[in-house]
Image (cartoon, rainbow, N blue to C red):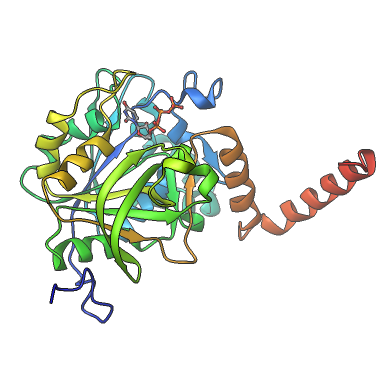
Length: 317
Ligand code: UTP
């Protein structure tokens, strides 16, 4: 009998640590223009923090120790954000502003940061390839810099993926979430064979299929674990009609070679917040602001006031 894809009993997710993560942040973010004209979309605030801070805090909480950002022009503020600012510290200390100093605690995150530039924005696959020397011979995580996992980024998915990668000797583990059928055209969609619980073997990946062509409604959720084999696959990928090297094409090559590619569903309480377009940015901001421990309640009251005013002015809406 074939071994199960992922036995449901412990030690299904043998707790293994993958120390390195690549965070691509080099894209132009054109769908968020003009907000992204001269600032990275990954630095747009969601409630009180920039998006990429949630991503980094999530990775560190999932035992990642070193992070390579794939950056580009106009992305310098990301580097500044994770750097120490002694002048600001002095100012806040002198003013005895302990509450504000607490907001800068993330500067002490136990991670080493590295930066390299993707010189031409030739797609996500090309961005990941820029991390080849950083990854070396070790498996690594890829976390999209514009996607938050879980409310306030408190997801344990990456550690579960790392455990699955080790225990199942996989070449790749992809985080996936269910999306409505009519929305498959916005995502990379996986085709799976034989799901067991929240794990499944991936046999194909299709970039942005129309609903009638989508093999499932499982969308790639912005987190991956790869063996270094992926770099050879990326090199073999032909550019798409827009000249971009797609990461999904490289994963498809892994599947075609018979390598073990697994999908792991996000936990039911978790959600992927993809902040690539304005509707999802607005919605994410409001959800995080409502859940803010300090200002959430006041924001809820303001929102209710605004909505009541709006429905009084436009009763037919
Ligand atoms: P997206 O495809 O959503 O980003 O990539 P984009 O190209 O910036 O978006 P639009 O279509 O112009 O609005 C997801 C992640 O991959 C990074 C992006 O910065 C984003 O965090 N990325 C994308 C790169 O690092 N390099 C690329 O060439 C493309």
